[in-house]
Image (cartoon, rainbow over all chains, first blue to last red; front, side):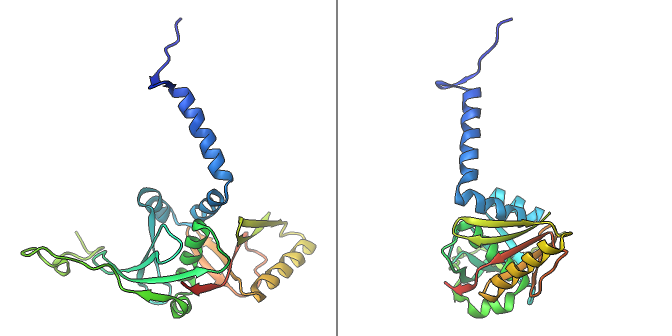
Length: 150
Length: 73
């Protein structure tokens, strides 16, 4: 029986799969890979899905109940989110020691979820993104807030 | 086996210990005090994605994470 070999360009599907496997193993062994694996293991299932799909995840502050979005980055990557899901004021705080991306994001998540008031007292804030509205469009305040639809 | 994870420039360092062994617990508590006295914050996982900060050694915690001190960026 003749075996059918599927090709994508000059590569067989099998060689591409093996290449991806090697790449994944290589990434897993790097500092960045280890830190991202640690981050993913400490995220809630919902946060993990959000992070894998969109590159950010949301957390709820333990003291005020406010929602924050932690985006990929090592500084200036935390923003408040209002009830309409819009990015608001930004906060900048990082762990000392020049940690890599995954560790920084995990430290930010834990700090907001377990010690929000103290971390915001040491963080620097910056204004949220400027919003432009086209003439004739409804202001976002008129939309149904998140979690109240339906 | 329980584990203490310390965030550092290499990603993280992990110290595994048997939390049913008294000697291992003493060593784990010594490490806990060493890190928390130098500004690290200790956190444990209580459920999927649910994290709490602890200020005293918890011998029942399966996983304790130590984060370096945070500063304004």
